[in-house]
Length: 210
Image 1: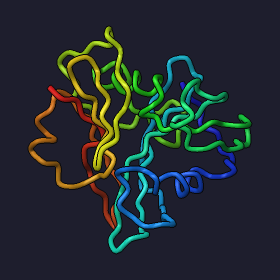
Image 2: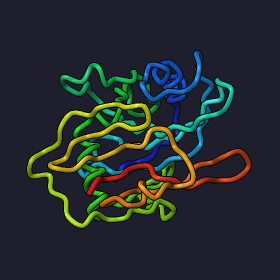
Image 3: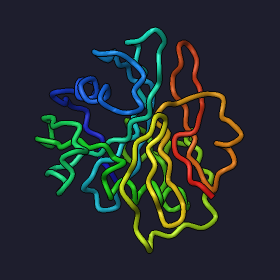
Image 4: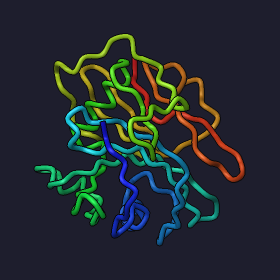
């Protein structure tokens, strides 16, 4: 179980992402990014070592706003051989230096996403300890095995894809509504909400090909 601390991070997550996000293949805005938090949820690391957060941010830098899904991990030491996945470091008011990574390149996060898709891990509230988030809907995959491990993540214009056996674990980066028929017809998926102007929207955050 992850413990949520009411404390500071210097620099903040938004500050780290303002520098990092414009360099992504799926970014649609301008520089500098103008980011605002719009939602999110978490998964727990069974070993309690790695923080796993699925951050939703809306960028108002361009002619129209775009909303992005940015999974992050927080570690107390560098992840070996993952310098290219580093978003930045931040000083946490309780835990000290935290190394913040793009979670699509962090094996602990990928394993927990797969665990959620087969019904073995429950999405947690973003800002509360030991509190499942019932607003996040998991459509459980029929069969999925980690026996063969998973391959390296590949960024595209809308998604980050991770090979898992003969399937593709797809992290939806640019959040859109409504959900298309193609996004609905998958082996498993995770749906969640985010703030959209004065209302909320729901869409696909993660999907698994059949």
